[in-house]
Length: 99
Image (cartoon, rainbow, N blue to C red; front, side):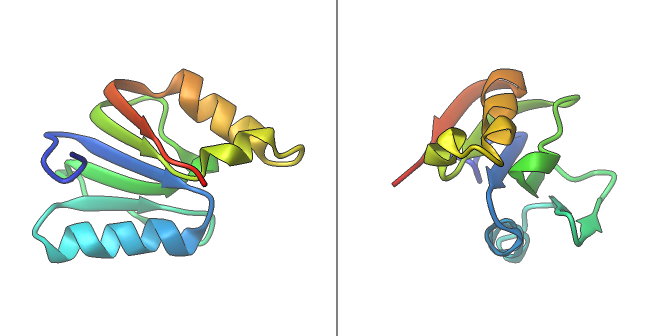
């Protein structure tokens, strides 16, 4: 669903996961931004973004959002970021994944 969306966002706990989604979407011809604490690749005409959860862009509208590792919402140190993403992201459809 993420790839087929007009505007999509993936957020997860690790830079490596965000970078993996960025690389996958980019290699499949989807224009994608990358936002992590270590990297910022922003393409003005990008339709998709991949980010670490702390850098989830709350000021944009998305069709589909994927929040990965939702069980981290219970983490006493970083759980605030999942709460912020879950309650604050503006999207038509949200998918939460956890293990």
